[in-house]
Length: 146
Image 1 (cartoon, rainbow, N blue to C red):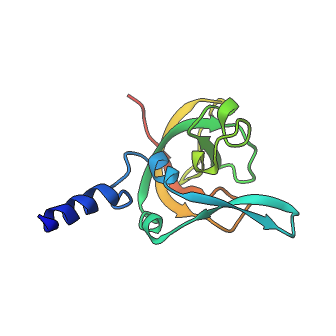
Image 2 (spheres, rainbow, N blue to C red):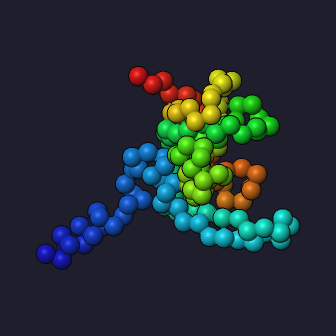
């Protein structure tokens, strides 16, 4: 009886061990805290990237989201959001877990603001460089929609 309870507790309580249904579900599991950066004289939300989330770093992740029209130095780099532009992290009050930086493996095509796209790439986690998103998909490719 005790053994079955422990197994049930393990199966229901260990949500990081279960593969997320998509990348947004994975990102939503990350906790953030505010940190004051003296050099910029501002508070930033910093992710706590524990060992459970780090298990997914270097693995392929798929995201379906809205293209956000931000000018980035690297033309193969874009930002997508789980939410449309009016509700995104930058404009609408969503959290940093709702945006991802996408670095395409080859030249990217043009997108329209709020165009829904699906991308797959290798997850890179970022907790220190405020010039980049916390969740980055490297060597990404655009998935075709059917």
